[in-house]
Length: 347
Length: 267
Ligand SMILES: Nc1ncnc2c1ncn2[C@@H]1O[C@H](COP(=O)(O)OP(=O)(O)OP(=O)(O)O)[C@@H](O)[C@H]1O
Ligand SMILES: [Mg+2]
Image (cartoon, rainbow over all chains, first blue to last red; front, side, top):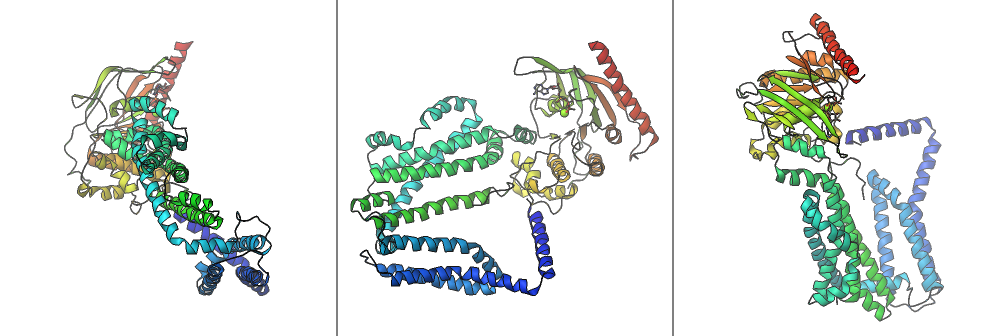
């Protein structure tokens, strides 16, 4: 849908809404406002319930470092109240907040249930299911180690993925363009590609001098396969009419490959980049669990060895933030690069 | 500048000598798309190709464009045998086939980019945008254009290289009657400014009469030239000149005659 179409549609929606508002009575409008206020106050209410449970139900587990979680909860409430005040003045933020209210409430509900089933009622077995306060304490106390682990993981992932990309893109492009390359690379891709990169761990450990180098190789291999396949199929499926147009305009082979084939294949290439990132995450974590002596995977392994499950969850949380952030970043890049595509799905 | 002074005194004579084109389909069957075409097109002439579907009109254009090679015979442009595409032979397809990843401006400039012309020498591009009536849409992407606008952009893209020969394969086929007439006039205006040789494929006999110096009527199976009809109407032409009707019935006669002929051939 074009931008102008969108705005015109929005306009008509607005007009309809306005018309409805005008035609109905004032009391209805007041009711609506009341509902809105109730909705916006729901998280505050849930927060209150949580806090009451937190303070007045006796702990049935021993908890150290609970203050960090208290501070977190108070900070979150403060932030929410600040947004609430701002949203009173700015309608954009208000609608955004109203949209997020069910989600925020659900998170609070989950925290409440988690707190009750662990710390308060002791229903879930320890040490596997620590209370939320303990997980947050682990995050707050051990943040330095976690941060270093993140950097190690990112370094490994970044180098491996970049190599997979730098090899995969040309591989796929050449396979899609030259029949000769396809003849030789296609069997390799078909035969080796489907093996999960992690299955190569014994071989990689034997061949590479360090587990660091071995992991980089495995991550590169894991991302190389989907990137190559999607680039290749993207380029092979480009509408042939584009090449004919380019040739009648005086384009040579270099122009045809770089300015026609690759841009036309970009939507498909991005699918490969996403798939490659997914397999790279898997391989990274497995590599760190098994051999590398640093990184988030290693941290999880190490914390598990000491039965410190709060740290395991803390690391999982950090991992979720990092990986989700990377995927979001890739989506942002895609949205920038593929602005020309109609009906792009937003992340 | 897109004006007559800049359009070089260019030639653009096209000669077909015993051109034959045979396609081999995947099952190995041969299809004779064109059989012994002999034709001479004068420099700066506007020629239309009409004929029933499958008579080889597109094939003929693609041969001139260099996208296909003749199975027998040869085609010359100004005494040079055509072998492969060249930017001096521009082609506009029925489908605009704009590059969807480029803005309208970039699409129109594609010919310059493809030839490696430095960006500093792209000033003309904005004039082309204006020439085809797309001012204000230079930064739009193709999916934001209507069919007619896209076809205008495709026309501008083919013109940006100053081709000696412009090949148009039913460029207006998908457009409504009004946009069609508007674009016909634009094509004529640009042709008169430039003095390009133009070969225009169409199914619309009125369109052919309105635009061309000569109309080439083709017949299918195998595709060949049935008759070449001069259009003796002076320019600028009026769409309801009395000669229009005479020529139209004449062309229809040729087409019908050809049909009967091929029918009797099969019976
Ligand atoms: N690439 C190809 N392979 C096999 N046969 C082909 C190929 N291109 C064209 N033909 C055949 O050649 C004949 C002429 O095709 P062409 O596209 O030139 O017809 P046309 O006159 O342009 O028809 P239309 O008016 O429908 O566009 C047809 O019988 C078609 O089947
Ligand atoms: Mg055709």
